[in-house]
Amino acid sequence: MDFMKPETVLNLGNIRDALVRMEDTIVFNFIERSQFYSSPSVYEIDKFEIPDFVGGSFLDWTMLQLEKLQSQIRRFEAPDELPFFPKEILKSFLPPIGYPNVLASYSTEINFNDEIKKFYIQDIVPLISCGEGEQPENLGSTCTADIECLQSLSRRIHFGKFVAEAKFQSEKELFIKLIKEKNVKGLEDAITNSVVEEKILQRLVEKGKAYGVDPSLKYSQNPQSKVNPEIIAVIYKKWIIPLTKKVEIDYLLRRLECE
Ligand SMILES: O=C(O)C(=O)C[C@]1(C(=O)O)C=C[C@@H](O)C=C1
Image 1: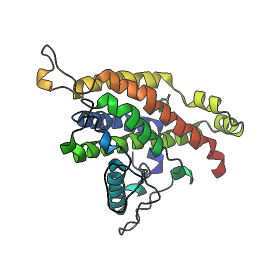
Image 2 (image 1 turned 90 degrees about the vertical axis):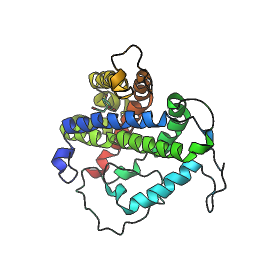
Image 3 (image 1 turned 60 degrees about the horizontal axis):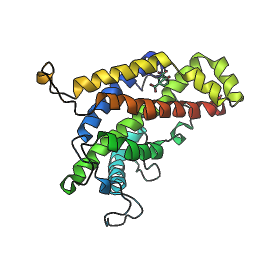
Image 4 (image 1 turned 45 degrees about the vertical axis):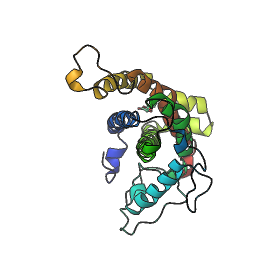
């Protein structure tokens, strides 16, 4: 899909292809993170004395520095990128790109990054790290791997806005009715496609098996997956897909503000 060409962005087939492609990024990022221990000191608030920074973790500080840099090279101008620190990002010295608007004007206000960070630290890190405990020499590498995971999760989950807009456009009458009724359950049913979800989960197990092993050992007796493929599917089933749907529903509930 090409964000300069709105007609390619709101095509549900293109959106789903992009979501499939993002699975690869997420699986590889989990595999990268799985080299390291859980490293709780990365996430502990005020664990380190950081100049001019209180009330956050080492991960928060690193993410903030990175977002300040990335905002200056226009990362967050892209309609599919959303910062974890929206109030602190900087203006770019580069000329604005001027992407055409395909989403409703309030779309950047729908930001689940705090929630994503919370479930990532609480639930995902224990599932994908190679063991429990600290590894002080790898503090920076662990945190860098975390940021890659978080940014890819954020992009995937907030892609729900494009899915929602595409679905709204293709079945306006139904969605306008449900939105007017504030019918959250009806909206959830309307956006759910269980066949697509099931396919995603099956594909993830295959991807986890294929990407997580040394290919030269693939046909030997006991290739070790770096991240348990079933766990990747569980993470999608329990957190990634439900949060994507939450983004879709929140986006749709406000959609008539712009009609
Ligand atoms: O592909 C869709 O139609 C989506 O809404 C995306 C998604 C997902 O998160 O992958 C979410 C809800 C649907 O049940 C199926 C898949």
